[in-house]
Image (cartoon, rainbow, N blue to C red; front, top):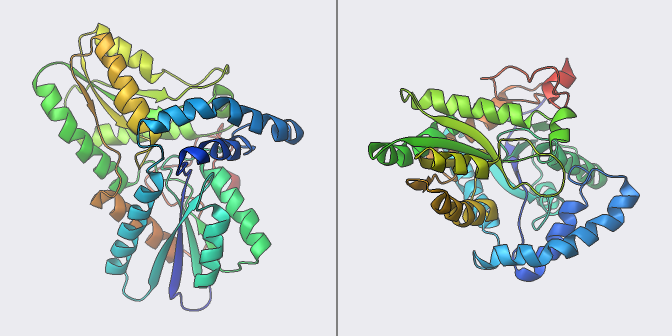
Length: 353
């Protein structure tokens, strides 16, 4: 790219969450209106999305009521943005960085973030999804919506997207440190199993070329290697299954039941989430804890998400600076890993070849 880069906008993508009980149904309607989530013809989705939102709203409001009636994800993502800006300023004195939060299904929407970026008038824009593992349902959906919005707004600053970082060293270091803190006291008192729990996907999504499951399992192997605990007993499992479709497995609840039957303690790490929200604070901390008790799990420890852990933030800084150092159009800045296997056609690196 020609010219000196002085102002860099970093756009942090996340899903978002309702900020009040009244926001739950419109949040769900936005979720189900996304063709990456509800994969049916557009005309069908137009009528099905509001129907599903209405049908699930009461249950969802009950879930959020258990954590104060709202999602904490916006505040946590803003804290990550502040930490990232501080770390970037410390690492690069010749450029000005500003991070913008862009939520897919609730405020601040991607369009709101794009308007703020446009007002900032950056020389470069870096898209940084807060989804370490790539999925068409998260990363690709968010980046696609950003591209649609900025085209409509006429934002012309050069753009680079970091598609994934499942093996990024800072992310892995932060995860391993948090896991170790929970694992060591549990293991000191008896047999313990480490469960890496990720949000699930319908099996047909993976079979259509989505690399998410492969990348989740790569992350787990990288954390295990970093831990270097001899004879570590660990599994990858998947949570949050809904609907009649067959989902990838094994399921987290089945693994909890198995651990209980085998007399194990469980240390559970949410491997695909970098901030706390309903699926960690309710599903893991309340529902799965209760399941573990019923299943006879010897002890239960849930590892927190990486949040603003310094190693994780430093890893994000590395990703941003790597992108800036390469004026080409890098679609993946996780250089610790090869491109996804050929069957995962959604991998942007494969699309470049």
